[in-house]
Image 1 (spheres, rainbow, N blue to C red):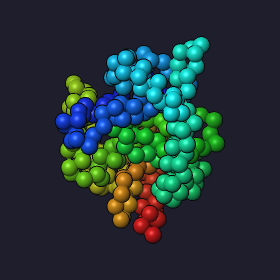
Image 2 (image 1 turned 30 degrees about the vertical axis):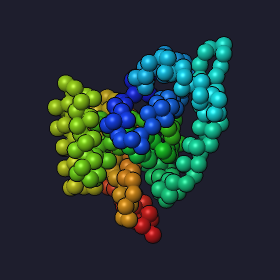
Image 3 (image 1 turned 135 degrees about the horizontal axis):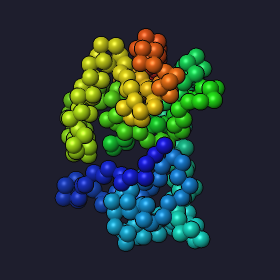
Length: 268
């Protein structure tokens, strides 16, 4: 599901980010962040392509991360996998997410009732990171496991996020997306504006074959009443099973209701 494309990076130097910014640490975290759900192992070339870092830097970073237990090395294939310390961090982060605890029972019911994939995500740079998934019993459907990333600009998950964040964050993020998408941006910008209007009017937005031409989806936002990170929910499935009208009449209102219920639970 994921492309092995170069990861969008924030080009920050010590001068740009201030004296407290540790560039070496940032590069090491970029290497860890290059791994995607479904990756069995990555070599130096793939890590260089995904992070934008030169190979000599990749070699130094991977050596250090192996010594610290965040990566393991397979000599026969000359590839790396996430190590036990990286896995421990990810499990600790998921276990302590209040939104995941509040959302999971509601997401499970939605998946069972709709026979569609239900995802919970939040922003990770220019992507939306899937932090929880509930799958239906249907043999055919969308499969996006936790750890998967999808684009912000073309998905209902991402557009719901853009519609509810603060003006300052939105302006900065739209500028990054404009630079990233280049000639495709005018079309995407119009679609994002349409999704924002949908969110204000209905509490959900739809994406009809815009991320993948065979997938239709709807997104809604979870905004904690006491502040904190914004999360988004999505329903999705094959276009031949999920029509635009079904999203508008049935699945969208159900998802918006679920998002409001989770938001309320986080304020309790």
